[in-house]
Figure 1 (cartoon, helix red, strand yellow):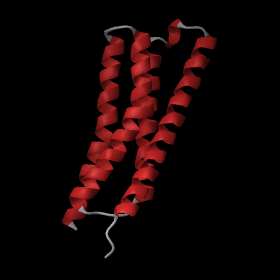
Figure 2 (cartoon, one colour):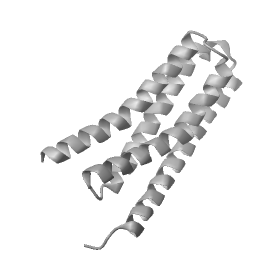
Figure 3 (tube, helix red, strand yellow):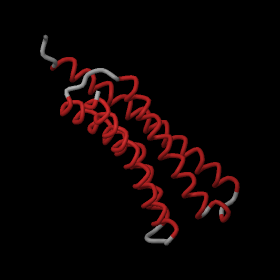
Length: 144
């Protein structure tokens, strides 16, 4: 029981704290105008769409290996979905607080479609990499 409580605490802390902390760093960069805002948007897109899903799958794989836990594929898929949703939402809030009122309606629509694309890409990459990780584990599993 204590092992499972420790396991889920580590999984949830490492899964949810990283996207929130990284997006708040991006928020500081945006609000303080550190660098070009176009490049920060690109970094946010790459983080949410590619880096975050791979990070989550690798973390789940390593923690499962350490605690010798199997299964929970659907729960990991839900965690990845939730983390990407949170990251995309914070990304939208960051953008809205800094430049939303300074652009025309067409540019706002373009950004909102880009954030939707970011979410869909991140979800696709995350779930696909989780699926390949599942196949890798299943293939290399030792029979009991």
